[in-house]
Amino acid sequence: MKTNSFTFKLNEEQQEQLLELLKNSNYVPENVPHTRIAVSIPDCRINLYNSGKLLVQGKASQEWITFTLETEILKEAQFGYDKVLDPEAYQPHMGIDESGKGDFFGPLVIASAYVDEGLVEKLRDMGVRDSKKISSDNVALTMARDIRKLLGNRCAMVTIGPRSYNRMYSKIRNVNKMLAWGHARAIENLLEKVPDCPRALSDKFGPTHQIEQALFDKAKKIKLDQRTKAESDPAVAAASILARAGFLYALKEMGKTHNFEVPKGASEKVRKEAEKLVAYKGPGILLDTAKCHFQTTDKILAEVGYSRKDLPSPS
Image (cartoon, rainbow, N blue to C red; front, side, top):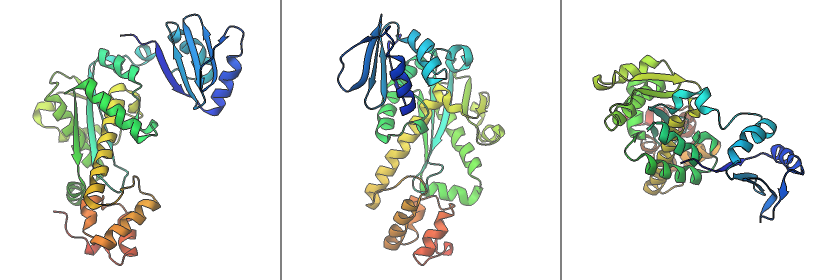
């Protein structure tokens, strides 16, 4: 179903430019609570809220967005040209993305999501976009729930927990090869549910042949594509949100198990939390909570009076 309601998040400069534009006499002022300005034109209502959120509604909203908002304020085409510029995005395919690769604590999560033209339209309506552009964890979790509800069994997830991750890394010694293995499993798991899916797309992280070599026989016929900034594709964007939600849930469960609030990333805060954890439970706890090949591990162990040789074998 065609939507007539759209939201955008504007920065301060864009808001000021929009305020000037909407002072034009063609726009009729409206009284809407919590807005910096609210106006209307025939079949289109435009509300700029104090938060910076822009809400555009009405039958003429798409036309106003395409010919006014994008050209004069956003300075880029975010809406209306997708089928022309990237027709493959609307054809049946799956997207694959991961979360947790750069985080010291927690698992590596790889998700896959299948789309066709009808599903792409619904994902666009939901505002699905690359999870890295979603600043709020709660928003990502809510959006992931909605994506799972929409896709049903047309998505899959592979979670490599810290113990398994450390065991794999001790044998493979290459993160990209581990990613390729995870992507291959996510592809195969989804192909069991959507066996006719013709193509798989992911962000480029290494040679495509690494994934091809990791696929089992039944999945070797699928066409594999990798490209930079693949998260602009709706299937990859959906997968990125599902993967992020899976990672966030895993951190929450880890915190319950080990009784600490697990921070994301690899910052100074992460290092301090890890030092407290090792001081309390010993160096072996890192095998069950962290990615031990990070150089952060050596700093943590040294600070608490250990070295890498004090780490047990992950096998």
